[in-house]
Length: 303
Image (cartoon, rainbow, N blue to C red; front, side, top):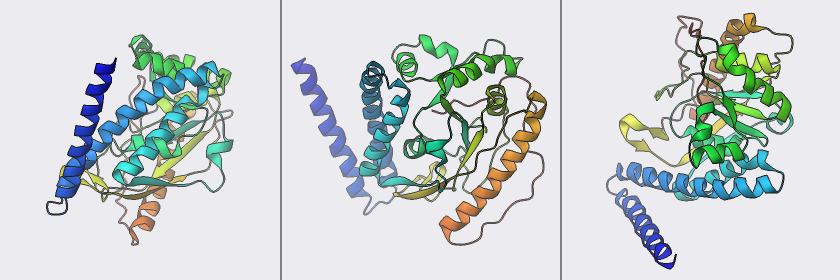
């Protein structure tokens, strides 16, 4: 054990020295800051994951397992602001993150930095969604199970409603909220936009008869733009919108619910980005309703 701890100490010392070297180099070679923050982000993620294993076990034993992912999210947020200088400014004037439960929280998905966004806004008694098959994955599956993740049964990919049934029952029984990205993938866009929405989150909310709470984040390509090797420090605004009720809605309402929610979120994203940049942002003309027509299960694991 002593030998392992010694090697671990050497590794962390060397890794830290490498990050500091790239930060110093960025004074004369600005692109070096990209490498420095990427390296810092990886080690922060590893530290948060290790913390998560012990936190989920301890909180589960204490009867508070449902806040494990909240605790790990906050840990990641705090160490990232110390090592990279990046944070998110949460605008939640009506306190929806604290008072609306259970719910399906949804948000726009720009880059891998959205994991940090979750770190700043992730509410208590909320979890990510994951494929049911991940339960059998060593370490990751154990942590997700201990921390109260909502698992989606994707065996029947032709029936989104059937796949969501078990998850909806868990949400109602445990009063556990979930966070999902309805775009299904990252946009990596330099300007504010939303990819077409997939319908899994809306099927889930209607089956569970819980509200949808949209969360919008301003475009942050000035902070992270992978194609341009840009990775800067800074503060990124996000806003929690009012809950959208689903009580009384049926699967026949999914398309309209997804369309209207996407339209609302897109409008707010442009407004928030304009506010963050200090000038107006051009809004492109919409060419479609922004909802995919896939019939199978459509969701993006929020992780």
